[in-house]
Image (cartoon, rainbow, N blue to C red; front, side, top):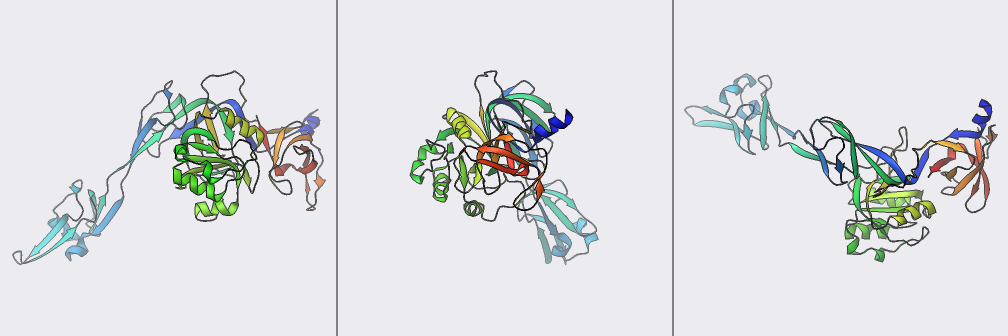
Length: 378
């Protein structure tokens, strides 16, 4: 029986598209700070829930060299002491000789606090003003857990769409459907100033001209099926690497639900987004495709629960599972698994691998390596 179960199921990377699910998102400060909320509090996506201050930039000046003195003699001529506030170009030390006829000064290279002076090197360090950091909730929900001074976890019941690839960080706004069908490719003229600050759903292919127009009108984020890899490199200003994305400063966030090229948005994805048009959503383009997979996501908090929640992804591949092929020659195609042969098979590349059989949405029956698909759970 154990062998039969092994033959009928497998585990594979999962893409979740859920009309209703409960998620938790941790919000963590870069340094110890202050949390503004407690367990059980309701929070809004753009609400500041925690804050801290990063140490300011350190600037250095060699007092010994500026005064033309040995380092051990610098302390005698100091005008400022560690802990004192200083301004840019303010004298830190002044050396006088021959009854004041000869003098030299060492000036502060920056405004801030005189942090330290070394009697060994004659070096002074000035710490700039602290940099305030405010942490937003990101999703509307309820605070489920707090780690005092460090982090909190927010729980949210929502509609969730995970994408294939994203760039840019967290974004917020009202969902605006520009495309009327998942296979539609919009024109730049579809974007108007009224779309400023919104998350726009652009349908299938995301053209470069549409991206330029989106930035021009101040769109918060764009969700589309696919775009050209060359256009993504152009947006980033460099070829896309293999590290985590989401930290780019692009003027807007982009989430692709299908991949590269000219691929229609999956019907399930389009319909779910369309069902929540006009509602407030949160979005994050952060993506990591290696160990510890992190997917870009669109989150629409639900006002009311239906009780028909999608469970957390199981990652279990079985007959009847919905999958997307992520390699050529069927890249981007959606289908349903019809069989999971237990024995490895030789494929056209002459490799021997475990495969699955699937019926694509276009009616074609195919056999592909299991490693070449991802599971779509709903």
